Length: 131
Length: 391
Image (tube, rainbow over all chains, first blue to last red; front, top):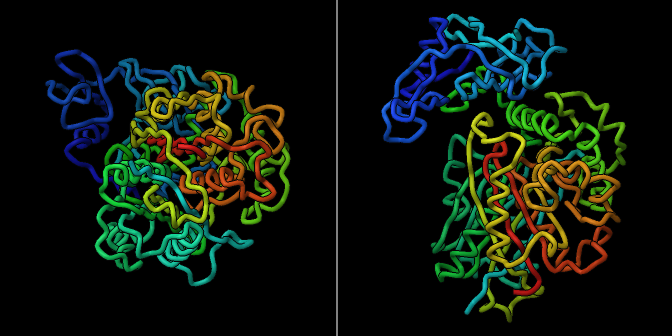
């Protein structure tokens, strides 16, 4: 259903999601967080980094309610659905979905928390709901 | 000292269905446009020793190496300079910048910049189930339609931060349509009201169908030569006074501030600096309008108004025919044509306006300086070029 190709940059992220853990990365030099996940420090190429579990809380940075399917045929029968860029407490943004929430409640700046959704047998995705 | 200049342009004819002539291929479109542009310029295929091309055709397959295929197809003998830069729809403005540098530095003399697309005839715009890889994998798993969903996220931010609205965006779509009605080669031939734009079906909120560019076939060609060949020119050469280019991200989620088009700020700043001109000196702006929001954010980033004030700038037909600020006089990607990668048409129309050959849509005042600006990807890359009547 999803033609997802995990690689050295994203493997850990998806493994974490499968275990219902939202993993992000952090430079152990500057203590800055970064996304999307990479096999090196996204803050500065030569810095050491570690994987950490995010708090799972954040706010809606932006969103769109889509009436067409994007990315995968998986979404053809899901319209309308909500795609949102979530600004995590740690200061990094994750592209995700708003789920289990009324569309009329969705606004930029609203507080959200992570809920893991098993989209397919292979892919579990960190989605967010309004709190 | 020889000075690079544009001496011929051409755009492909599209019919009432937005398609090119039946059985055309992206290659035959480019050959046809190249012939017409060369004919307009006074030069011939034998003069061409440089080639720049970008497109989405022929992939996977020979289209991965488009410069090779075009060299072969057009029969250009051992070009001295080739460019296949693909930064999305902005690519042809990158090509023009690079061609300028190549000619100025003596690498070659006469360059063709080419584009062709049969995306509508061949129904090539299904983006579902492509491999979810690299940074886009997260967007794709979230189901973000590309590119419209990405532009919707930026539009939502812009409205939130600056109070722009669906009305603002509708005004931009209506102005584009008014210009298109003056262009015989425009796909859209019916008038359009603000109400019709506002009531068009929502694709990705807040963007509706009429906030989105068209899906058509099309193509174009630009001949870039230099003043050493001036005896051959049929038209007054158009000079490249300044340019700038940059890029910042591939996925919209890694854009620094989704409501500010920083890449356009930077590319235009470089172009203004190189030319010694500023926004007040610009007589015509040709801005890639992939979506209505792209125009709004570009006008702000190019310095025609302050960031956040685009909503006031575009009001009262300011950017329509008869308005104070001529913008996208061919009808743009919103109402003239959009074969997938549009920026070549910003150059074509700017040249025609400078030459004074734009017919019914010709701007009344003299067009001495025009800015062409292109966005590529999802507000990812930007290139700005200032074209002038005088060097």
